[in-house]
Image (cartoon, rainbow, N blue to C red; front, side, top):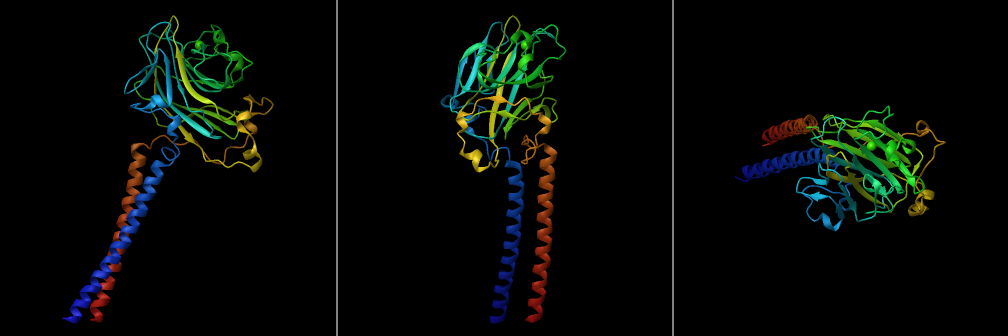
Amino acid sequence: MRVSLRGCLNKMGNFRAFLNITLVFLVFELCLVCCDITDGNTEHLKREHSLTKPYQGVGAQWDFSGSTLVTSSYVRLTPDERSKQGSIWNIVPCYLKDWEMHVQFKVHGSGKKNLHGDGIAIWYTKERLHPGPVFSNNAHFYGLAVFIDTYSNDDATDRSFPYISAMVNNGSVSYDHGKDGRSSELGGCSAEIRNREHDTYLAIRYSKGRLTIMVDVDDRNEWKECIDIGGVRLPTGYFFGASAATGDLSDNHDIISMKLYQLMVEHTPEEENLDWTKIEPSVSLLKSPKDNIDDPTGNFRGTPLTGWKVFLLLLCALLGIVVCAVVGAVVFQKRQERNKRFY
Ligand SMILES: [Ca+2]
């Protein structure tokens, strides 16, 4: 009786050890999967600079002006009507040195090809809610503008529209609307963004003086490079915003979300000691973008994982669990046999 009780306790102890090992591996695998999914998507998301559905309570962090209409599934900067101007502005200044903004947007309307306009501008500027002629914002702005221009104002243009371009300004240059900002653009690309059935995204990354703009507009869930330029200097303490305008031609200009991610980048002590709020927006034109060394932090932060990636991760996790269970079961059985022999 004493022996069988001891044996029983031993068995329970072994089984508990087996369970513990399995549980540890299970937690480890699950953590690996979870970490992989959250990294770059929620971990460093800055909610105070982000705008996401269903936009509840965002009034404390964002201003909506002009024709802007907020519903539970989109923020419409302008409706598909003539002469409308709308904008949204983050109330909280951004003090991050390295960041990446993901904008999900939708431009759609009843206008036929080339009979729609004008587009959306995404801003990181000193001033906010400053109306003007550039996609309803001030032309002599301080900071960065990224234009999603859907109408070619310049007849002589060789660029295909919609056209995405970027501009950095210290207040001294005026965006030339009649030429679609050609003289002041840092770079650009054409992108079929209008009347798409699927989601369309734009990402703006600013890190260590490098400005990179990527688009994801072909429903492939992958970023395509549009602009990549070094020697760009932008201060901290500016505001994020988005604006749109229609003229004689129109479109619905919708912002679905704006998500700001902090990039974890190390800076030298000298850089850290600088007053980043005092930096004047500028671009070093002497420096070729090609001369810049790639950011060691790697590629763009990913969009949410696609179905097959999640499936592969879960499959790996499942395989890991199965292996752990088999190893655990074998160890458990061996111990049982050894105990049997002993008794
Ligand atoms: Ca234009």
